[in-house]
Image (cartoon, rainbow over all chains, first blue to last red; front, side, top):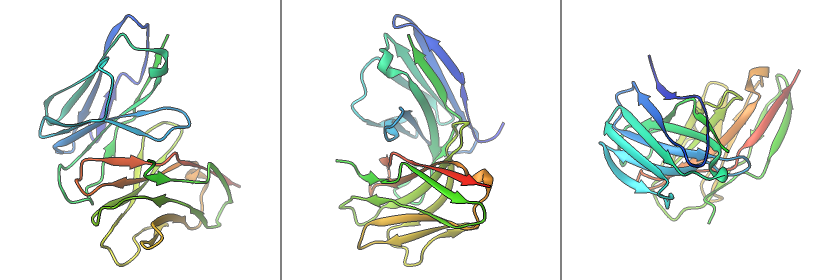
Length: 115
Length: 114
């Protein structure tokens, strides 16, 4: 496989469930990101990992728990979510760099519905 | 405070015509990067074009060009010779001077009319 893959593509869960989103990149990048995309709102950066270390956590509620076991894999563990957490969750990767021209490459996203 | 502003929720363009999608940004960094992404209905964000804050020439990538006006803090995307496949959401984004933060606008929905 090439690029950035995400599984599952669609997920429906109840507020008491625990689930995980998975992201894998095959681009040799060393930075990975989780974004939340809700309707009518800008894309929100949730977490940033550089060389497996979390470098940014943009005030994300603790019911979202990221995990980055290596530079190619990123997980987002979900528990006791709220209906307002329903959104498209996008994973992205890039080269970790202070140079601002390093662009991100995105996966296809997981569309999450919380009932 | 919103860092990226896209004031056009929706745009229509005739096939084969050119269209400009507006983007303004707000930053106090000297070094930053500006990006445009396309998001079809399938959901995947596709990188289109990049402009660095120190680049003196406007970026071009095929039919895409970025009209960079640094003093006005604007980075408009120009799509020439529109095609039906260009119909999608378009997002302007900025990477800050630390390299770790990305800011996205609310997007512009472009519809190409046959």
